[in-house]
Image (cartoon, rainbow, N blue to C red; front, side, top):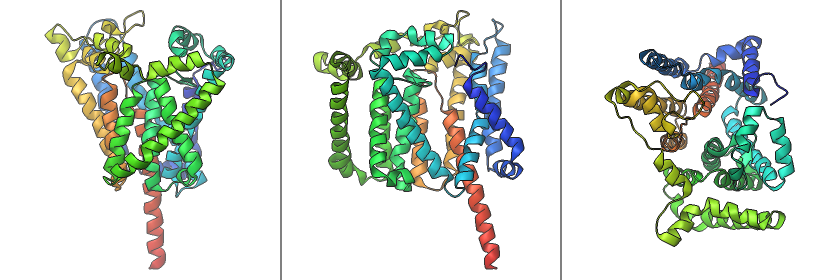
Length: 405
């Protein structure tokens, strides 16, 4: 934002840091979280690898990936603050309230994005508040803005990533009996809004839908019949209702452009028999690989060109990592991502949550075929939330056992 001298996420990080010194009992509770040191030790090793790669490659210093990975350490402070607030609200429902909040915020983001889409003047007012670099980034992709949703701090590839995580969480809420799920109407509307906003933000969300279906069946194979006869028909009916409402309040021509954009893959298949779209063809052209053994082994230590463009003209996650620190460290980095998901899955004995972690890992793997992505922010937030929840449960159990004796 123009009126903040520093980015808003940094402000939240500073607030989180302040709370570490304010509530000592809660701080002790957080640092009792099992495997928190393992979580950050693994993250530190990756940071060291990045520094080693920079040292091996004597080209101009490229700190893009260093700063990107450093965020997992800075994310600790907002995560600390968020879980602290939930702890104070109800320390026995931290996880359920956290999951509900993520879904509700995603639904609100969807509503804001739809308002931006249908009322361009509000979107223009929003962009006028952004910093020059951020507003120029949106303006330079004005053609995409005409047929895709833009949210507050959530656009294009990044937006799809966030909506997908909320979508996966929404799938497991019924099995956790959260407060949001008990409010069936709000839950269903939120679920449908997330799907619509996800698709209108980026077509990669179709992959998230497929992974969501896998998650639904992993939780309970008996869900197959429920999926065929209840879930899919209900979502289709609600989607058609919302689509009709969008046509009635929006520009018919613009809505048609959005529809053609979202379903371009299937429209092209119907016409030519090939599952292709402008974005898939563009992505395929970005699959470029090293021509020297040195680059394959230790990379070039570059993520960006001096002018800020993608190194080697590729935005593909795996390609960028290979050119940055070679194939070996690329594999190690993905193992690191799997390790974080594994540590998270250990926080709950529930198969439902373990299946969720498996799908989240699958989503990370898929995303990097499209762009450079990780879910460190969500993994850390859920890790601390579940960790604090477990420590509280253990303390309550000890107190109960003492009272019985």
